Amino acid sequence: MKKYISTLLLLISITFSYAQQAHLEKKYTHQDSLRGAITPERVWWDLLKYNLTVAVDPENQSIKGSNIIKYKVLEPNTVMQIDLQPPMVMGSVTQEGKPLEVTHEGNAHFIKLIKEQIPGDINEIKIEYSGKPLAAKNAPWDGGFSWKKDANQKHFIATSCQGIGASLWWPCKDHMYDEPDNGMIISVNVPGDLIAVSNGRLKSEKKEKNKTKTFTWEVVNPINNYGVNINIGDYVHFSEKYPGEKGPLDMDYWVLRSNLEKPKCILKMQKNDEGF
Image: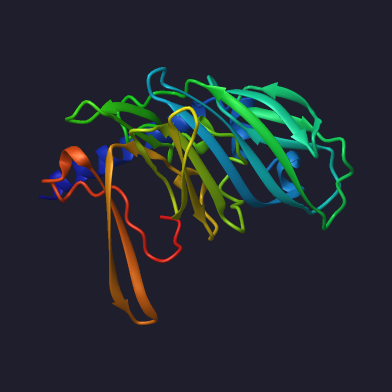
């Protein structure tokens, strides 16, 4: 028995040694630093709220939209770092209707602000973007969009980005140290025969002139960037109310029409105003 234990300890020691050596030999790039560090271009402003709008084109597997970022100035600065990963492309960036200059450096984009940033002020910046986001190879274990079809050959689309980061499909302050204090609004435009489900509560459903629909969701609590997701499909909606300690609890379910006989396929549940 002692012989076996000694052999096991030796194997563990060798494995740990190899792991340490691999860690030491890993070459960290400038992009790693821009992504992982609380850079000077990040630290001077406090994220307050996102207002994300995205139109999803299932046929072309592409998206386009904008994000209005509300923030509080903590200290004077003229450059803001926003993250957006290729192959997504950042378009125009404006503040108070004025176009801003942007320097692109891989996943990081440095926006030169014209307006004086005075500590205590609350400002907004609008970023437009578009492209064909990375397709997930083995969701949810890797990040990207999943472009599938259900049993009725209707589009079935989902996102997964916990590992790779939310900036794979929308521009944001992609660092876990800062979350939007006042939550976010997520508006998703999809073909008219589909439903878009996202975080928080559904606030409105609007039929557009081009035969699409826009679903607007609202999260009122702080939320991690990587926790923001969209699910699109031919859903059927139903709801229930349950007695809670502090009043009624309402719960909404969104189930693929093709899976109505499979109750385990519940893809959306809500409880109060939680962003989950």
